[in-house]
Length: 295
Image 1 (cartoon, helix red, strand yellow):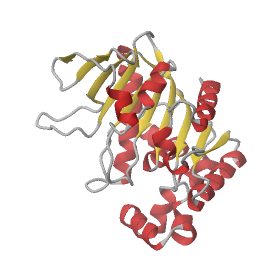
Image 2 (cartoon, rainbow, N blue to C red):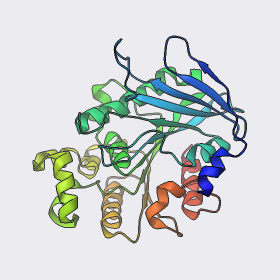
Image 3 (tube, rainbow, N blue to C red):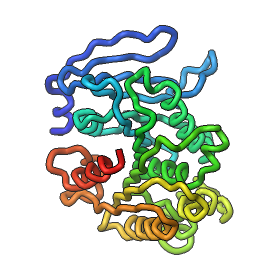
Image 4 (tube, rainbow, N blue to C red):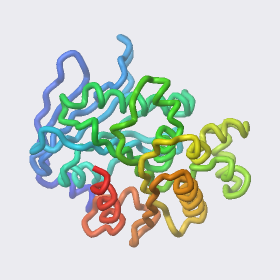
C-alpha cells in the first residue's frame, strides 16, 4: 500500500492530446519527469483502436537527450501490460535515464515470433523517432521481466530477428533479464519444469522440440559474435530460476560474452522486479552499478 501512496503524494499533471493520435503527455510535478502515453511504435490501421504495439515514455525533465531503459513486461507471454512498472520510472528518471515501457501482442492471439518482432519494431522506433522525445538511441539498456526477459534475451542472442527487420542492434549497450526461467526451454521441458510448468510451456511453445530450441536464447549464443553484456537477476530460493540463469551465464561466458549474475532482493527474492528502484534495495544498487558501467 505504501508504494501506491508513494506514487500519489505530490502528484499533479496536465494533459494535452497529440495531434493526429491517441498519445497524451503529462508532466509529473512531484518526480520531475514527462510522461507520454500510448505512442504507436508501428503504423496502425485506420480502424485500429488496440493499445497493443504502443509504448509509454517517461523522460527526465532536466535532460535534452537521455540514455534509455527499454522495458518489456512479463506475464507468461499471454498477460501483462506496459503500466506494470511499479516504481521503476521514478527511480530511473531520477537517476538520469529515460524509461520506456512497451505493450506487445499477446500469445492468445499471436505467436512468439510476433512478440519478438514487436520488440524489434520498438527498438527501431526509438532509433528513428526517439530524439524527438529526448531518447538517446545510441545508449539503450534492454530490460525485461519474466517472459519479457526471455524476449529481450532472444532478440539479442538470435540476431536474425534484427536483420530481418533491417534494424541495427549497435545502440543496445546491455540486456537486463529479471527472473526468467526460459533461457533453455528444452531443459525446462525435459528436466527442470514441474508438470504444471511443462503444460504452460507446451501451450505457449507447442510440443515441437525444434520450436523449443528456436525460442531458447541459450541455443543461439555460440552463433552470435556481437553479444552485449547481460545482467541476470534471479531468485536464489527458486531452483529453476537459479539453474536457468547459471546455464545461460555459462553459455554466454564460453561464447566470449560478459554475464553478471545478481541475486534477487534480500527482503523478498520472489519480488525482485517489484522492488527494483525502492530505496535501500541491494539488487537495485548492484544493477545500477552494472548499467552505469555500460553507458
